[in-house]
Length: 276
Image (cartoon, rainbow, N blue to C red; front, side, top):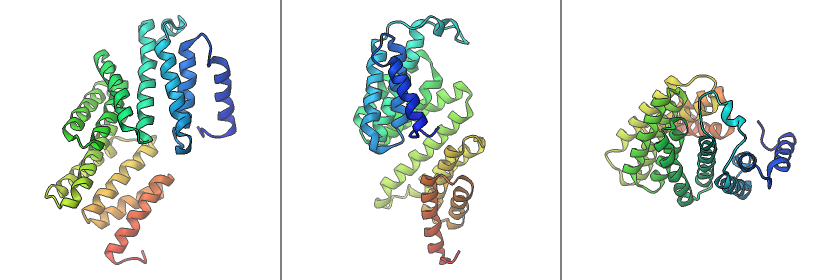
């Protein structure tokens, strides 16, 4: 979906007119959540994104009842409170992710930790996995590496419990990000751990790549980008070129394409093959 075209804006407005400010707090929360999610891709709309997620949080926190059909027609037995809580922690995770994307890491940690604890207690592994991975990444930014590793392990556990290969791939990619982040922080100190961290990142990204299918092009591109990055830092320029060229040729998503072109240029420069 192209979130900023006229048709999508019109659909969001219909939802807003129907539910926002109404008595049905569940669908009011959904409408604000949909609007917040739609604005997430655009930094210039950060306040609209966060504002709508906050309104969604307020609405779902006030929700006491839902339409009985949401309980009756669920494919697996559930309760009214579980229906409310499923959406509640989806909103909390969305708000935490948006805070993190826009640089509000303390606020992100607060709301994500609340969601993670409740999801873990309920053993809702499908929702818990990505929430744990987001917390792991935040702890990296705070340079709390042991805590980051602990939440990464929680994410792996939840992914394994769901049997979802895409979630498992996301965990491997997060482990690679963990290694690359620690490498970047240690690079200036010329630590002897640097090469080992890069090899660890490569191992994890290759594990992710093996289990991804062709339906996850954007995610696959990010994995390949991580491989190109790690090989470049290891000065294995031929391998860097191989993966960077894949990103350019196969995926063409602009954000990854720009990174790939940079690795291609720098690798060819290092090899003295600028005409390639």
